[in-house]
Structure formats: C-alpha cells, structure tokens
Amino acid sequence: MHPLALSRRRLLGAATIGTALTLFPALPAAAARGTRPAFRLPAPTGPHPIGTVPLHLVDPSRTDPWVTPARPRELMIQLWYPTARPAGPPAPWLTQAEAGPVGRDLAETVSGVPRDLPGLAEVRTHAHTGAPLAARQGGWPVVLFSPGFGAERNSSAALVEDLASRGHVVVTVDHTHDPLAVEFPGGRVEPNTIMALIAQIEDPAQFDAFAAKMVAVRSADLRFVLDRLAILDAGGNPDVEHRRLPAGTRGSLRLTRVGAFGHSLGGATAAQAMHDDRRIRAGINLDGALYGADAATGLDRPFLLFAAGDTDRGNTPGWGAFADHLRGWHRELRMPDARHLSFHDSVLMVPTLAALPGAQTIDAYGTIDGPRVVAVARAHVGAFFDLHLRGVGSALLDAASPRYPEIRFVA
Image 1 (cartoon, rainbow, N blue to C red):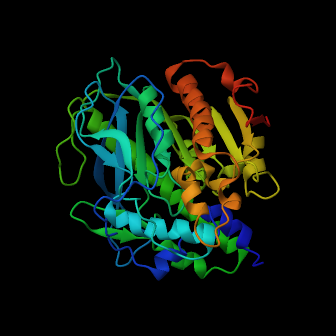
Image 2: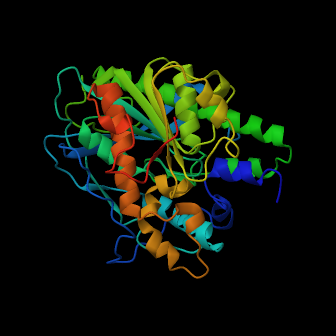
C-alpha cells in the first residue's frame, strides 16, 4: 500500500473519491421523465417546517488558491431555517449538473467502476425554497456546516434539515473547487481542481501540509460566511446577483449563538474555524482527521468528537492530540458498527449501491441500516446544539442511553 493511502482515504472520505471526476467531466445529468428518486430523506423530527434559500457570495479580499488565473474566492451557500409558512417548491438535494459526477463517484466508491446512478437529481429535501423565515425574538441560533472533501454542501441534508426543524438556522457551504461540482447561478459549473494537486504529492509531510492548507482555506470560508450573515441580519442582501431574499431575514439570526459542524475534512474545518474565530461557540467533528496547524492546541469551548467504528487515535491524524487538549465541555462518542460515510446522506441508498455489480458497501457505510444511522446521528447532533446554543439540556449527552445502543461513550 502506498504510504499515503491511509491518510488520503481519511482525508477524502472514500478510497476512490474524485477519480470519477477525472474520467467524467461535470456535465449535466440527463433526467429521464418519470425517474424515481434514488432515495428519500427521512422527515425532520423538530416542531418547525423548514425553508431554504441558496446564496452566491464573493470575497473580494481573498484570491482563490485552487485556480489560475487568479480570481476572487467565491462560494455557494444555502440557508435552512424554520418557517411558519411552508410555501414554495421543495428544494433539490443536488442540481442536475452536480448529480452526474456525484453518482459516478458513489458507484466507484463501492464497486470500483464509475456508473451513472439514476434518480439523484430527483431527490427532494423537506425544505421549501424561498419560504419566509419564522419570526423569533432575538433571532434563531446559527449553525455552519462544512462537508467532507469532494462532497457538496447538502451532502448531510438529513442532519441539516433536522437541526433547522428544531429551531436553528443552518448554513451549508460549498468550498469551491473542493466538491466534485458546484453549480453557480446561470448554470456555470466549477469542478474539483484539488484532486489533481493531491495526486502529485509523494511525501507524507508535504501531504499533511497540503491538507492543513485546505483546512485553512475552508476555515477562512466559514469566517467570511459569518461576516456576510451579519449583513443579511442587518437587512442587506449579500447575494452577488441580488436575487430576492425570503421575507423575514432582517433580525432573524442570533449571531451571538453560533455553532459549526462538519463531516470528514469538514469536521477539521469546524475545529479550525472555532480556533480562528471566537464567534463560534460550539462545534462537532463527524469522523474527520484533525488536519490543521492548530489541532494540538485544542479548544476552550464545547466540542463533540463523533467517530465511526474504525476511527481511533492510532489511525486518524490529530484525533488524540486534539482530544487531549479540549479544555471546555467535551464528549467523544463512537458508533462501532458505522463507517466513515455513515454521516453522508448516501447511507440512505446503500441497498441501491449494494446491488451494483461487484459492490462492497460495508467498508464505506458499516452495517447499521441507513435510516437508523440517521436517527442516531440526528439525536446526538441535535442534543449537542440544543444544549450549547439554545440552552435546552438533555441526558443523552451525559451517559449511554438504552434508546441508542449503537453509541459508545469514549470520554
């Protein structure tokens, strides 16, 4: 095995993620009339119906490090929020342009062969596009979400929607040129450009430095998003095209109550952003290696390390050093029968993936049924942010619960 194979796998989230992008450019997927959704997201469990809106942001103060010639850093983000009037069409999980490369990559991850997966563009979320924000005195707590490397902003929508339904405004972020494909207004698609750079790295120290650079760029993305959310909350419109915003955005965000979480490299991003920006009060790492120059310094605010069954101090860079230096409220949980991609929405289509010729899904997804994994993760992620952003306590984070025998308390 190549000496970097384990580190690369932990960074990328799957053995082959990104390869399909090289073989198949990010072209729009042809949606067959009447195609059934590849999977269905479980209904959110909170009391609020939810709305959503995408925003296009440009940071003129930063140059995008992943493309030439130089140009300002730009992002697509999406707000998910409580609404009192669930009007508007349900938002898609992926756009047509994103569904093709994502499907081929998922197929290659489990079977070794990139294949088109029908129905990904037909998956719908429970969020109503453009629905007005529900009013709340003082605004709603805000949670930032950073996806894993190669993954799109809505790749853990099952968790995001549930948090929004419980009373949070969740902001998901596409770290441009890091996802397989990001579609911008007007149909422009920006592909992943980082995989080609990773493929050139042979030295382990160089790889760690590159991963730390990726995390630093992502952390800066989250801090910039927070700045733009302040404009939104003040009644401005940070969208580059100044597209119409949902009603009720002014004063809707409680920016003194901000959390961050992420899956895989997004978990490292959440930790780094907390280190870099004290506006972020609490964070969660979902099974991510803690790349970043500041992993060993830890944090003094609440943090949850949530691991799949094959993640530990011995095989996951930075995990032990970071855990040992957490100085605020903290927990370390493990789901032994889960695997790295259990925190990705594609866990809900494991039966479809398992039916592909030559497919082996256990290494990527573990053995827990997809809807059950989602339920377990929702309960613990929701309990954490309810406690630390909304002040709503739960015994779920104090000790193992018979309701969730899948969970082990490590610390």
